[in-house]
Image 1 (cartoon, rainbow, N blue to C red):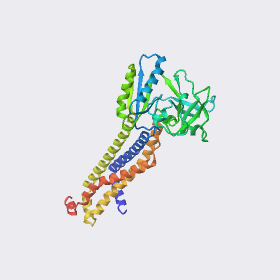
Image 2: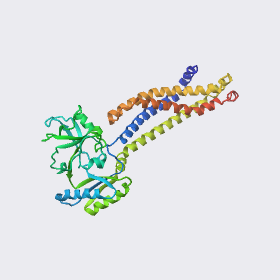
Image 3: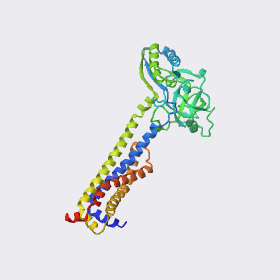
Image 4: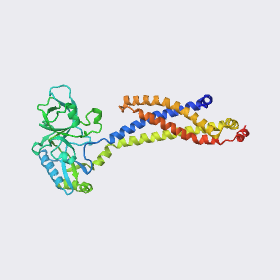
Length: 408
């Protein structure tokens, strides 16, 4: 602590370098803290559970061309029966969509059909009685749909069914007292008839990966309906170790049934997840690279500035060594000097980091930054700065009194 006063006096004589280094540290801290926050939010998004058993799950989307609408339902049923009989297939189902596909069908949920405001917004999935088994969805109470409850419907003439299975999150939202099972609700505006909850599942994610922005990511309603339309989405649960074989055999079997179709997508669910979160993964990598580059540039700046100061102060160092200063004293001087600059930069950087985060929250709807990132970033910058100054400080400590005197 005895060195603080002379160090501050010395820094006043080198204001330009001191200010520039402090600003560099501050900007690095502000950007790095927010970059870490963005990385963390992207990682949370990518790791978010869908509610499905994602292993051994294959998705096939196809569109039929030039088919009589009256024949569509029988053709779709034939596809499903064929897929279920394939070797290596445990089960198969047709669904209007599935988590991460992006084909979202949101509707409001009301207890009063004439109410202006909805109680919750939800995602609708049109499924059959094989959906829970195929997708690996956990039913926590109630029952699955019965086969006699499944009915086909045209997309332009939908009448909401009498039964529904909903997620626990939606049940807690609409019936906070925990009495959702057996209760009725209304779908959409001015629905003529109620729908009764016959089952509650643990969790299922909405189709659109950004549905959390509209507060319905976990609010899902399964309806015992099959949409009759030219584009169909099939989900296939394969037996263990049979995913690759079924990925080849399933499309071939469908083509053999009906060649008047175009496949829109054939992929494992793992591939679906990777494709959906590709941009999030890229953003996380970009933010990580930017943070590393900024830390490296800051370390290089500290190293360069200290090296310059050591070269300028050889005479003063020699005088101090001649007066009895040890090598440890010299190293301590430069380490303390750099620590003081770093602490000043960190203090300013904390303010900038919070301000930048507030701007990002307002402009881009990013999550609030956790204070832990400011703490981690501050410690990391101070440590990196101290490491960067070790080399120049060690060279300064090795300056002998005689060499310094001779350089006069």
